[in-house]
Picture 1 (tube, helix red, strand yellow):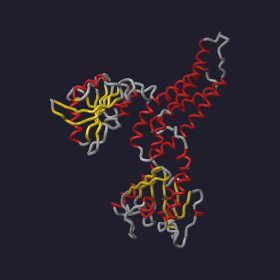
Picture 2 (cartoon, rainbow, N blue to C red; picture 1 turned 120 degrees about the vertical axis):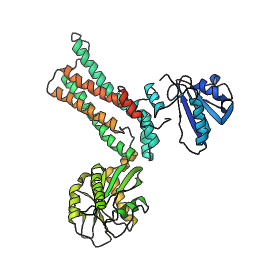
Picture 3 (cartoon, rainbow, N blue to C red; picture 1 turned 45 degrees about the horizontal axis):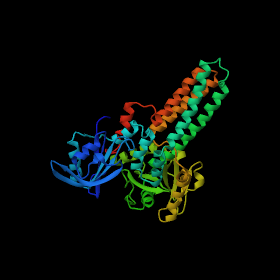
Picture 4 (cartoon, rainbow, N blue to C red; picture 1 turned 90 degrees about the vertical axis):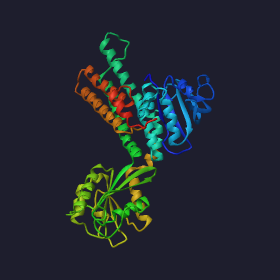
Length: 451
């Protein structure tokens, strides 16, 4: 990290301004060599200066240059941001002039990576930077901001401190048993602390399920046999005619996607091909896609025609879906019903139609109820937000449970301490106290260049 890096930090295209960012120990002197205006090496930190960027005595662009000196910067290194006119030509010309000074083009996410490696932020905060950029709802933005401010990091550090204190007491008791003024560790105390930690880690994991919903939305799959009104439900939910609606069976042969927000949570809706036995090869592929999507869905809307008796295809679908994440949608309730909610004991059921707003609103209300969206929206989010974090938390839970099992089986206390140390380290991996270069490189390669 001794070299200087540069990248365009704004979206490429026509706009009012573009920002070219450079970070490194020589960044101020490098830009000063290209800048026509004041002497940037003598200005105060966190100040903006008007002038021009030149190369070979030719002016490239009229700019504002922001100078930020180490250590109070995002990367903790000297940073200079050149605010030039928006547009591909001017921005690239400024970038090229800096590259010609021997500066290296930054890799994806390298500014944030340096911020992490230099101790400016921890790993969960680094991930929150990208979450904030990619947030599609206000709830997702709030969650990313909470994580960026270090709330989840502080919570995990509090768990690690409890383990650290317990391990220290165990070590002292093992190494210095002759001292009477030290706190005497007992199996019951170890068990009590471990059980308290298990409750807290469980709560964090459970809360993280809501965090995933906020960040990624609810993957919703609409399924049913042909002509039960799936496409009409999709169109009514998203408020546009995205899917073709006809009386001809098999009109939808591939998946159609749409998005809405309910209480600030994204609903990523997929309308699938009507599921039935068919000899049409194209329709058969669509049917298979539909069945595969059922396994990945967070929510399944199984649409049935309430004015018709259940068919063989309907019964087969009921066998395919997971009851816990399915809403039976008894569509076309404006017609004489042959199906009622009583026939679907144990399922969440909604009676609806696509001719009135009330019909679709009843479905939205049921979704809000099942996922408790009002509570999710209003709660103060301190949850884990991605698979990496959640996987490490699950592993920490297992090693902690192993420690509790060891206590219950009267294992020597130093054997129990091994599992406690593993739990401590796994929680540390979540926030980046311990990490491997391979994991760090993989994490930041998914960032945008310039961030």
